[in-house]
Structures are given as C-alpha cells and as structure tokens.
Length: 154
Image (cartoon, rainbow, N blue to C red; front, side, top):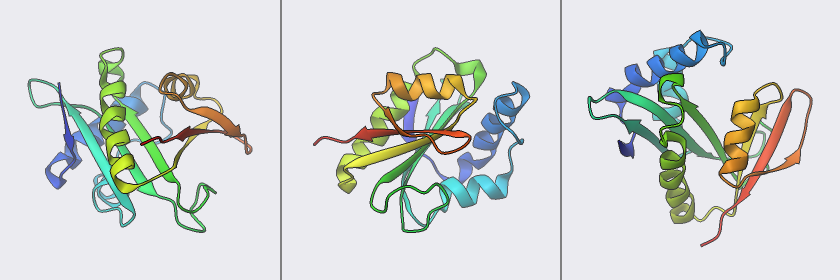
C-alpha cells in the first residue's frame, strides 16, 4: 500500500470510495466528482489530503485535514484541524486508516496544529471506534454527532 498526497487525477477513485461506503449503508449519499474536488482536492483551507493506493493503483481510502476558520459548518474552534476519513469497506482491517492517519498527523505537525476535531455521526459506531483507536477522545456531543479531539504533540 502506498500513502501519498491526493491529486486531481485521484478524484474518480475517491468518488468510488464514497460510492462503496454508500452501498454498504455507511454514508447518506453516493459520491460526486464536483463534491470530491471542492471538499478534498481544491478545498481552500486544506492542510492535507492523502490517499491509500493498493498495488493495482486502486484507491482504498482517503483522509482530509483542513484548517478550522471561524463559522465553519462543524462548530470547531478556530485554529484547530478538521479531519475526515473515508475507507472502502473492501479495504477494512488492512491498515488503511492507521496509514492515512500517520501521514495526516505529520501534516498537522508541520502546519503547527495543536488540536484536531473529528465530528462523527452519533450512529456511526465504526467511525467512532476508528478515531478512538487513533487516540481521539470525545469532548462534545451536539445533537446527532460525537465530536472527538486529538491533541497533536511535536
């Protein structure tokens, strides 16, 4: 498996990951190329976005990290990072999530973040367990969400 920064040529594979998550009943909507480009590749507050690619060149998952500005849609404190993780159900339990987080954590440290937020659906037990395994801890629970925080150390 190769973990590397996402590029525009990865958008179709990232959309496919969203589609696979949707087909498994773990996402509310299928993928959309424009949304992938806007939210992950061309995101203006992007700190990093990484893809996990298998030996055949297939994207197994991706993780994004953006800078939280005042008034962000997640209610995250300004100056924190906002993380999002998307792993194909076909790639579960293969080290994709932990590999992606290592790359994202390096980017967070380079950028100088102190904290990272993961806002997870309250009904997403897999997502909550993943972030707990990565060292995130619950710090608030707005309606419908469980928000977990990771303290970045140098």
